[in-house]
Structures are given as structure tokens and as C-alpha cells.
Image (tube, one colour):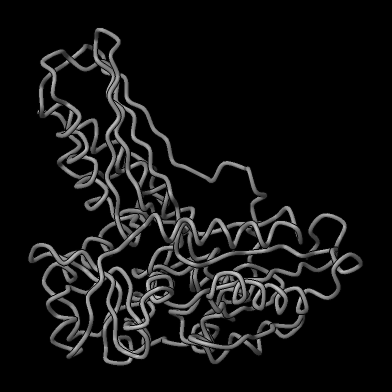
Length: 399
């Protein structure tokens, strides 16, 4: 693969494991060497935001109901999340990385940083030496100890850090992509989503090596157009670029202009759901999930209101996106003036959380969401084959 004037890319992925917990432990010695969960503890619907390795070994997973996590991990310490601290730590890591390359990309406040070091060897030495240097510098200045992976593309570099978590480093050398991938579980490939894993599981395929027994035409038959992307991932190919600092991150932005200004709730919600359907499909095509949904309301008198809601892990599920958007709509639509225009913006895009929970960990809400995601992917395949307007949900239809 050729990128620019270089025949091979050198992508480093730095990952501070259990980032929120690691930041919380910096100035709180009492949290060291004991199970810790970061979560908003109010209410019965509280979910795990992050957890320490000790809690992970006890079976706790991100987004698990907090009550269930408490039962699984006795003596765990619950700490409320402090996003401003995580953002500050991420900003410092970015500042340390910038002298080595202008191509430095972070995944919000999750402790993940990508660096494209292609062609920088004459200035700073081999990419592996830069990775070691960054690890030592972050440890010295921030007290955080990142693991790192080096590979020819972003997907492989991220998978390399997953296989050594919570400590260590791993290098995937050019030409060794297939050897590295073969034994990995499919859940470690960051471009695969939960519905993809469920489909593979239905055919009793759990590792990359098992999935490679399918040719591209088999994947296209099962996954539709997305089968081509999945085939590339299984081969260890990923052409996605590390974004330069200062470049605006990708967003999904959609608009709806009402034919006549309206204050009819049903009509507005139908329009909003139509935008959500298009946004969800676009996100799934990108292989991304949105951690924030914003609704822009423009009134007939020119007034504008913007309200937004966040999702801790990110989602491309139409139903979850609509729940967030409808809450934002209810909070923002407070005037009696009619609406002229709606805008939906999905941003803070991340790779979707693809890890499937074990059956005993899934509650009723999780099972419903899995069914919804399977439905979304089935609709995507029908629309890929027969067109965008070939099938729709009743909610998007008029009276």
C-alpha cells in the first residue's frame, strides 16, 4: 500500500489502560491496588463508565449496570467521573506527541492517541524508539503509563495494544499482518461492530482465522456491501488516516426544512426520526458511533435553540440515537412559536464498542438493544440491495 511518498506507514497507538481510573489514582493513593469503578452512582440505571484491572478480572465491564457490577466485585470503590480531568490529561499527551508529527489524533478523553510517524526516521529515529520515548515522557510528566503498539495501519496498531493490555508493547512488522491477526478473536478488530460479531457467531466463527475461511463473495452475501469492508479488515488492511491536529473531526450533519412551519409534535418527531435513520445508516457505513447528539431548532421568527445529549460509549443504533435526540428536542422546544427547520448533528465519533457481553451479564435492556442492532443491519442490507426507500419503519410515515 502506498501512502504519500512512502511505501509503508508507521502508526503508533498509545493507550493508557483504564484511563479514567488511572487519572483518578494519580492523587488518591487509597485507590491503588484495589478494585475501582468510575460511575455516576445516582439512580437505579447507573452504568459503569470505566473500571480498574482488578474490577475487570472480577467480571466488570464498561456500560454494565452498576448494581450488577457491585454484586460481582465485592469491596469495590465507586468514584464519580470527572471529565474535565480526563480532558486535561489528554491535552497534555497530545502536546507531548506533537513535536514528533503533525499527524496526531486522539479519541476524545479515552486515553487513546494515534501518531503517524511515517518518514520521520531521519529526524527522530525509528518509530519504535519514539514510542518508547513517549511512554517514558508520559510516565515522568503525568504519572500515567501508556502501553503502545506499532503497525502499518491504525486498526493493527490498536489491536496490538489490545493483546498486551494492561501493560506492555507490541510491534506488527510489515508482512506479518496475517500472522498477527490469525489467532485473534474477532472482537479485537476495532472496525467490527456488535451486530457483525453476532452474525459471525451464528455461523460459529469466532477468530480471524476461522472467518478467513470465507471468501469475499461469502461475506458480501451475508453482510451486504459492508462485506467488502470486513474482508479488508480480516486481511489486515486499513486505509484510514491519522487526522492532522487542527483538522475538524468528522461529524454527521443532516437538515430538514418543513414545507410549512409547524408546532405539531407528531410531525416534528417524524421528521426528527427520519434524520436519525439517515444519520444512523451513515454512521454504520463509516464504522463509527456517536458519543453526542445535538438538535438545532429554528423557529419561524428566526430564533434558534441548540440542545444536546451524550452517550458514554457511543452508538449508531437508530433507536438509541432517537431517544437522545427526542430528549434534546423536549428540552429545547419550550416556546409556542412554530418550527421552520430541524438540524441533527452527531459528533464525537469513535469506533463502536464491539465486545459482546457474556449471556449472564446482559440485562433486559442489553438484549433489546442487541435485537435493535440486528434489525438495523438487516434494514441496511435490504436498502443496499433495493434502494434507500425500499423499506422504512412506521414511525417515519405520515398520518
